[in-house]
Amino acid sequence: MSSKPFIYATLTAIWLALAGQAQADATTNRIFIVRAEKAFLQARLNYETNTNSATNAWQFGRACSELAALATNDTQRAETARRGIEACRHLLAREPDSAPGHYYLAMNLGQLAKAEAPSIAAYKLVHEVEREFTTAAKLDVNFDHAGPARTLGLLYFQAPGWPFSIGSNHKADEWLERAAQLAPDYPGNQLNLAEAQLKWHEREELEATLKKMDAIWPTARTNLTGENWEQAWQEWDARRAALNDDFERLYGATP
Image (cartoon, rainbow, N blue to C red; front, side, top):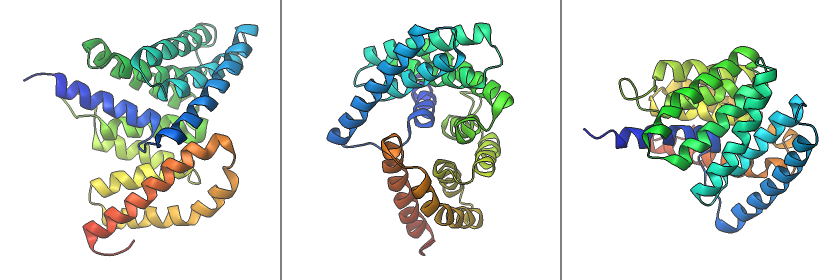
C-alpha cells in the first residue's frame, strides 16, 4: 500500500492544528496577509537589532509561523518557516528551557512540512513537531492560552493512528481536555474539545462543553478584541455555527 495517503493525512493534521479550520474569502484573507507581513517586518527588525534577546527571537518565530500559515505558495511558506526555525534554534541553543522557543519551533516545522509535502522528509517532521510541542508543554503548558496542550490535542486528534502515524483518541482527549481546563475562557480550546466529542459521539460530554462555550462566548468577545483577534473570531464563529448544525443533524435537537 502506498504511504502517500497517510503522509497527506498526517500533514493535514499539523496544518489544522497550526492554522485553524476555517477559510477566509480572498478579500478578507488579503487583509490578514498584509497585517501578518507588517508584523513580520517589525519582528524581524527587532530580532536583527538584538539577536540575543529571547523575547525578540520567539516573537520573530511567532511572526514567521503566522505569515507562513497565510502564504499563497509553498516557496514563500518554506522560506518564511525556515527563518522562524533558525531564530528559534538560535534561541534554544542559548536557552534550552524556553517554552516559547520550543512552541514556535514546532509551529514553523509544521509549516515547513506543509510546504514540502508529500515528501518523506515532510512526513518525518511529524515526530519533531510532536516532540517540540511536548517539550513546550512540560516547560509552560499555560503559554498562549494553553497552546502546547491545544496543539498536541489537535495533532493526536487529526493524525492517522498507529502504525501509520501518531494519532490517538486517548491522547487527543487527554490534551484537549487539559487545554479546556487550563484556559477555559479561550474559545478555541472549547471548540476543539467539542469537535472531538462530536466525532466520538459523546453526546452528554458534548452538551456540557457547548454550554460552557455559550457561557464564555460573551466575555471572550469583550476581552479578545482588536485587529489581532479578527481572524480568530472569523474562524471561531464559523466553527461554532457548524457545531450547532452538526449537533442538530446528528441528534435531531438543538444543543
